[in-house]
Length: 207
Image 1: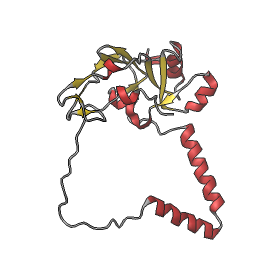
Image 2: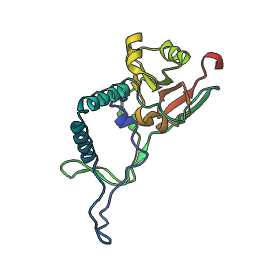
Image 3: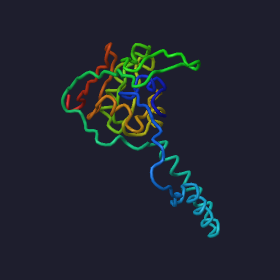
């Protein structure tokens, strides 16, 4: 239910960072913390001893279903009360040379690259709160699956899919909201070469 794969290209980080081996400094100690797997195994053993394994399994299944139905909301977003618009440049500057599998360098460090030059993606992206009927109406008002990507920042995407017969995605980990600097929803992101245009749009009583 994450946003579609093109975002791996369009939403590249602002800069590519190189890593260096800085060697070993000071004494090394064995990690004493219990691993997550060990902790789970211990809990399973305790539950099994108490005859509560079925209860634990049911609890884990309920939690998994609840997360799929309603992922964690994007924190800190408000409801748009005034129309605002700005542009976002997705270009990145290479900090290291990039080479193919033969070692041939095809891009030098310092080169500025705009992902839009290499992407055919031209859909509108609408980010909105799925629990707000006015925002849902706004998101569905224009476009279709061929030209519009509907992305929730809160709500139940599966329920909306059943109700509206459309695909809905979820901005997990606030990838889109943070990349485009969105603070209020609904917000519409469109391609406006060589940048992306972002617009926060008030709806309902705020229109």
